[in-house]
Length: 230
Length: 114
Image (cartoon, rainbow over all chains, first blue to last red; front, side):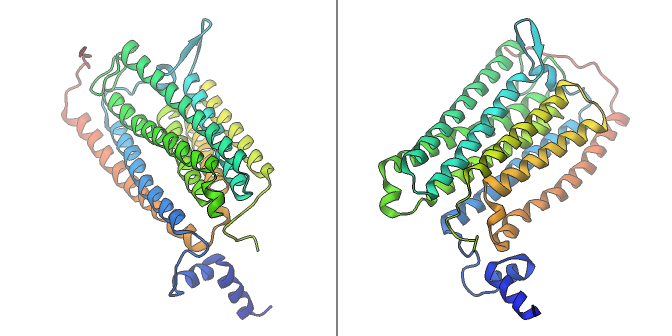
């Protein structure tokens, strides 16, 4: 195969560096085969990445420079079930719930491609229900921390006072994303059920909502690792 | 050609990734459960975190099947955060050293603000 053939194949498929350069220099729309709504959701998610990234970097800075020991999240978030203390068990359950919701969302997108109206809508509603239970557990977690443990944004009995401000800011902002996601999925799921996208023969709204939802799960992966496990 | 706007993958693709994410989450929880400490702890936490993030982005968010142009446009800019991390590590160490050399150690007093 000659070099020229290889290059033109890369250009056509958008593969590799050559394909990327070809797409960017094509004097047409850069993101080929990507509907504008999807491209814009990706750009929004990129900006959100920087917001959460900055939050986590702020957390790193205070944790590295505080003179007071950081509270041990493993103990702070332990839950007593039947007389035994399980470290971090509530957070683990929340993690599994969010991952399950990502799985159902991925399947909803897949059934959307297959134009399966009922299954798509059903899986989206299941995803929203998982999201709702996540927010419910988070409300329980916050209540326990505020009422029983006495954690405040400015102080807590376990150690470094920044623990509270970081915790409420990061998990609060993430919980807000989940809550908005639940509303978003419910709205899109209702439209699916109503047949809006069948009339248009276009299910990309489902995929775009899916991107948002997977991103919320993605952010949790980082929060779980850096805030709860570190 | 596999690169079309409407991608269809067998449902098993998603189910296996889902299962994998479950297993990886269990592993990261076990890191805490068994109280693994030191470098091994940081290494395992980061390993499971990056594996999970990679699976979600590449398969669930379909990045694997996108063209290079959008993959680069979305995945490269977050690398700038690494520069930010490096800067703040230097800054935090400086703040920490200043605390240690300038301030007299005090016992931290917990105040009640109810």
